Image (cartoon, rainbow, N blue to C red; front, top):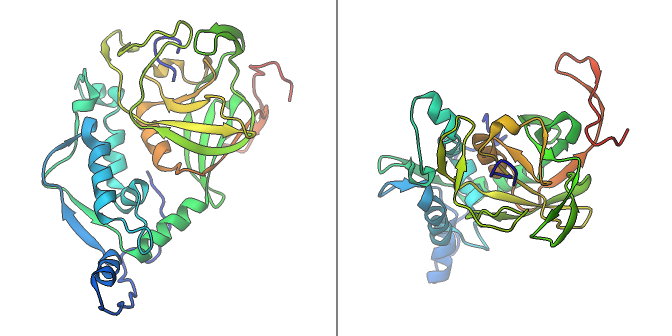
Length: 306
């Protein structure tokens, strides 16, 4: 984890999201059927108390426990957020550097309030949940290493494009692996296989745990609580994570110990566009078209000459 950290237009094509779902009532012959019927109904709930980032995931888990029904309406945290996309904007705005642009210094990001008692959340009905889950199936993530770019697509349509940093073009002894490790980001095809929503932070070189980070502006803060996303590439889980960096000055560089890092605000967007199972491609294409449609040749940062 060099430099201490290693690390919407949310397009939901749900044509009838706000339409009334055609629900066929179940025969009311017992408590179980009444529970299934209630699970199919859309609900609006009020947030009863302030929810800081430090308790955000516990709050979301409590909603899933209360309102999800595996058979009738399998709601997940990602489904709830896609039904309330403003939550992603609220989380992205807690990015340290966005806060500093507003002259708001935050030492401990976990104490920032993201949900207020005045907020209302939609708990989607079964029809909307099904549409959201179908939207997930069309999602995929594309990373081009020499371009230092992570893109999110849905059904071939580009939703987001973020600058990233990638692994260094070197080998180094890491205490975590107890061996000399090739730090280059691995290339191949795979998927998103897990999350660390409450990550601990260790220096992989010496194995020491740390709790604070020195920012690009020289200020020191606590490490932010933002999920890390676990990848599997070519059938191997090699510890190559997608996660935030507290030092965006390192973006668009080969700087990390193998992981893919993005801005803090961007990392929230990526997390909610990467449900478990989302396909992932990490490639090494040196010849690309820029935003003007011109063919350009990128610097061969790994000397692979692909």
